[in-house]
Length: 151
Image: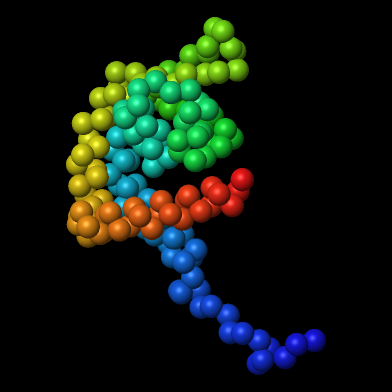
């Protein structure tokens, strides 16, 4: 049995990068929520819409990959979006396992709100271009390192 007094001190929760990433994620989604509610979409749905606005039609597999998610999350999300009239799902006639997701006119019409939403986000969190670039560098580095350790 070791003496608790001789062990290395625990890192305080407030100093843990992982905790602060979690807290930052919750803060960001809390700011997005009132911006997205009038549009009738959740933050994860908004991310799907943003992907489709940027790239056009995508398979569910492409959405899973690009959003760094999983089929168990994306498939029900897309099904709900289809019921809301924002997207349509189409099976590939050559491969029934492949489903393509496309924007409807209603889903595409929400695109006009994206610049204003992002402006509120950047202003709320004080993202100057330099701060945004620095944050993106750190976050992309974390994601890239996680990808290499998962392989």
